[in-house]
Image 1 (cartoon, rainbow, N blue to C red):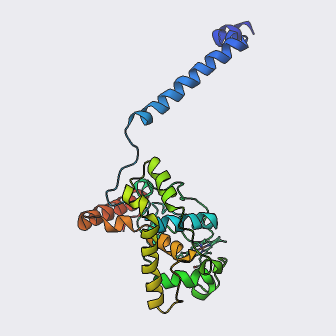
Image 2 (cartoon, rainbow, N blue to C red; image 1 turned 180 degrees about the horizontal axis):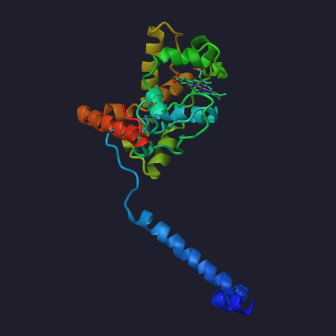
Image 3 (spheres, rainbow, N blue to C red; image 1 turned 90 degrees about the vertical axis):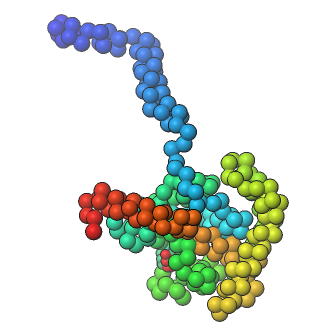
Length: 253
Ligand code: HEC
């Protein structure tokens, strides 16, 4: 016993002084914490900016709030992971830079339904209208609930200037012009979508309904990186990144 105490002498003695021991433990945890935190705090940004990523339009923002209100994110994630099966099913994997204007972000991990990060442009507007009204009309056996009231309920656009102003205060680069004209901008985009739905043989007069805002939001998802200004370089870079991701997984084509 005596030899044992001698071997662990210092530590054993410290353990016998609870107050001093607590203070020393706190100091070492603080040092560890600072060492982990400092590098992150010192770099300007850990998220690479993607030039083609733009803030949501006012109407898309209204649609996004409907998406959150209806809890769509309880069944749908918005983040493609860098695995081969995900890339083949959904396309390009999600980059942090794509969601810099998302407050709150909707990456999620629960997938009762498919990931929606790249759903923009996958279907015509009318498909979304029909799918929301009755999911089984477009996707037989779907277990997604219907959201038919979105086709009847008027969208609230009057609070858009306040929403844009708040986001601007948090760093989203909306111009004063956009903030002042948010409602008119939203109405114009809604009219365009509603006209297209009608032209595709869908119901008339959806311009001021919630469904139109939601469709605007869904059709935007994942499209920013497809519209990179220098399409060829961006495409080459993204194909290269995809190949790298596949190679990292050990089964490149
Ligand atoms: C109970 C879970 C659940 C909820 C809640 C839910 N969905 Fe779905 N969603 C699904 C399932 C399952 C599918 C796949 C079958 C289908 O296409 O309907 C799906 C499919 C979709 C698709 C088609 C995706 C694709 O790539 O084909 C879209 C778009 C969509 N949902 C949007 C929404 C929106 C918007 C909301 C909220 C208003 C919502 N979902 C709420 C389960 C859900």
